[in-house]
Length: 321
Image 1: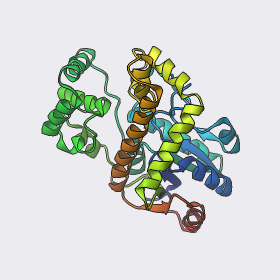
Image 2: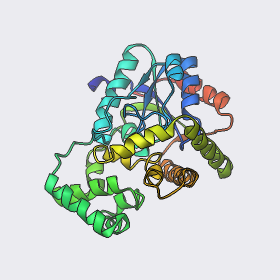
Image 3: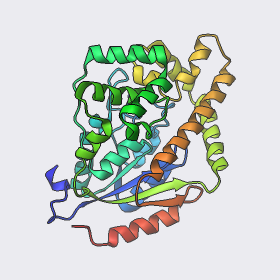
């Protein structure tokens, strides 16, 4: 990986990033750009890494993957834990592999933490889990609820807490576990792991809607399409394996249907809850992206022409050294 990191003498590897909220058309745009500029797509989605979870994660279809090579899809089983620390080395290796093949690496996804860490060159060390501490914190979550634990994180690490939604139990748990175990906050660790220079010559293309309702309409339509394309079978499988698949069991697209399988709500009620949960998730994604620098925002209704012009101009420019 040394050849990908800027040393002050060698030019940086060019890296195209297509980001945006869920249902904004990232995959379609990334495929168009990959076809035009001889690129390959690297997924930056924290759920699309799981095998067998295709419909609920809006994974690129088999037909789409035949058009352009895709990387970092279906690389883990739902029983495996996966984090930004797992993602970064795999993504950096994929970027190097694509570049060595003479293709343009195109990172496409909506997981803000993954994208920020990649673009900024942050490194994360996999902390060895402390099973007893984690069990203790999980018990506190069960007793007090996510909001109370988020408020506790606000006291010890307000910077990290304000980046997280109060219901993001997984990341709140990780931040509290790190603090309890090491005395370091997540924000301190991230600042210490940030290099002086960013590792890539990056063009960030973001998809945005001038009217928020247009995004919500797309989300609602996607959920209806998921219902037609087999989300029930996937959600039922996750429900049946929820103890062994804790990440999937907390994922939007699956947990909303658990009350249906338990006979506590109708299918339509759960589908409406999924629409609302997805709209809320899109808001959180947009909030994260607004904190990222140098994003070229495109009209998601018709982004192709402007995106092509920006990419061509960027590719024609001298690489940063």
